[in-house]
Image 1 (cartoon, one colour):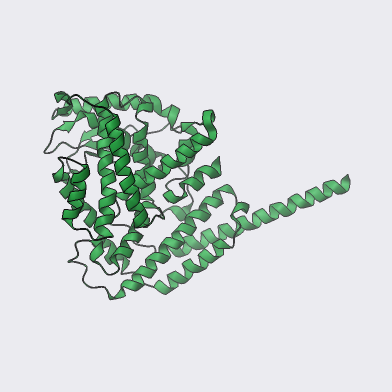
Image 2 (cartoon, rainbow, N blue to C red; image 1 turned 135 degrees about the vertical axis):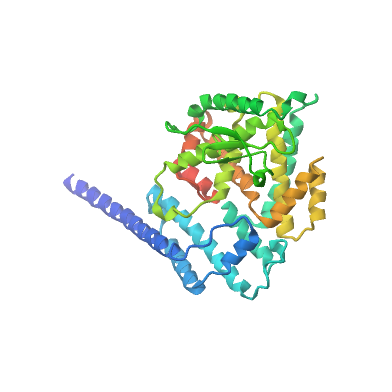
Length: 423
């Protein structure tokens, strides 16, 4: 018996040493990544593709960086991930993703060394190796590994799905005239009432957050943001009221997306987390915007979308996001003309040609950004459905959302790994 206990003790000790060895190696690689990555960090994404290209082409020590990322990726591949602690498994995935992303970026910079003048360009498609740059921008902005071809096909499917959702609302009557208003006091009053309605449901659906700052509501005054019906910044939700009346039917989805449980909740929740220092400069907009878009689907769970027109408001903006996916790839990867893009828009969205012109210009100036909403949302919805099917009656929104938010923003391609890992 004593020999058996000794054998078991030795066996456990060896197992722990092996586990510890993998963890130690991974922690060392994290230190190396942090040190070298921030020695020459990649340029932050700008709102203009010309600025992005200019900043990227100023990169120096390309061969040194390529050698570092290649060696680091090789070292990562030698680690048995199942031997790592749970938190280190996520670190492994994030750093592997960053190595692949940066190696693609550095290859493109080398390819583009003989580039011409950037200033006259109207879209990234016109640049040297433009379609390849666009494919890289899609990964950088969204955090996915999908190709532009796959993204285009996804967009076409989403257009049809959202049109089907709209048809199922079965709205026959004309929208009430009092839904369109320029009365600022009425808009603020309506938004505040809905904010309180949401507040009563948050604790049942989302992780505990005892110090969530109050969301202030103000009229937007920045014309540069007038293209959107509203926006969020620093604990304030701004609704826009410029050249057109405000549609009260949009209050529900906008408040969810920009306020709680969308950006306001997510930003403040993530700010209170203690993430590892190597992630300080890593932000994944596909997760951030995808989360806000995903939460719009929970309006009924929060007591909203009581009138068909309130649900319609959500889906009408969703069809715009879906059409934009197709147009973004068409314009920037395939080189569509503005007219071809407009024809596709008109085929699926009626009576909003002024918005179409604005959005087409935006997508050419700011390629891939519009993809973040739908691609992030889709990955979260896919993980949600898998967990529901797996857990059945034991499924909990609160548990799902807690595990999803507890690690900060991550590349959306890692969402399935993160959710399954923690079950």
